[in-house]
Image (cartoon, rainbow, N blue to C red):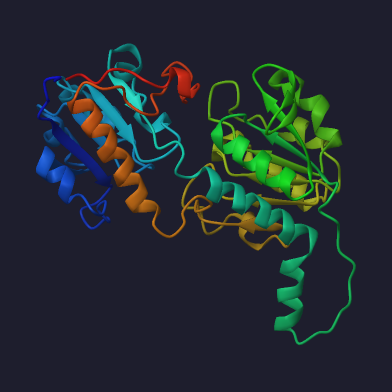
Length: 337
């Protein structure tokens, strides 16, 4: 039998001590020494710890606490994105990084379908008119046959593609390379050809990771390529979109609307124009958060911790040079048992 490895796990659970800790940690606490930490105390918790469980996806405290991470062998993020843990030392070293791929895919696809239906059927307008006691008949749009451009061909983008195709939309994907006949996304165009694909889309859905290439990819130039009747939906990362450019395009009706679950700064500042625009849906980074999601995140980490201790392949191993899991075939690495 493989030799088991008794781990010391630092859990970065929040920025302040009153933040919510992950639930159902009893089994993990029986299997390993667990040290709970905030941004301020992470350095102390990392001294001698070989595992870091980053529960707070907004925290970048590892960058400051890195001098204390000499024993660190594995970082697990309770999120799909891992930019907040990719310190230079993590990227350049032999530290394994895993994420929570698979937990959020279907809920986020449901969210995207929901906001598309909300736009097409003018549900916001219906609620406003109801609040005013006004009976105003309108015509709405069809969803069947509408064209969706899904930027990002990872598991979340694929789940979105499947969900939209099942509901009658015509889906095109945008990925690193072009290909035809993708089972989830139909035809996939290369990222370099995104500007040429935008004019055909009724809905542009962003589900891409944040990289040097994708940062700010939706700006004045790309927004100008979209149809005046098109809507932008961002469930990927806030910095994929230059918000000032988007606000200008929305204010001048250069595009018809936007549904935004992620933002350049979170929480979204109270003085942001996005809050009060009648053609914008704002949600507080919750598109993947459904009842039971916190327990699912802990269960995934617990399974990986057992694999790590037994020297077995880890699930959801991230390609640190790209910041995401490349494929199931490449998502395993032996635990440091």
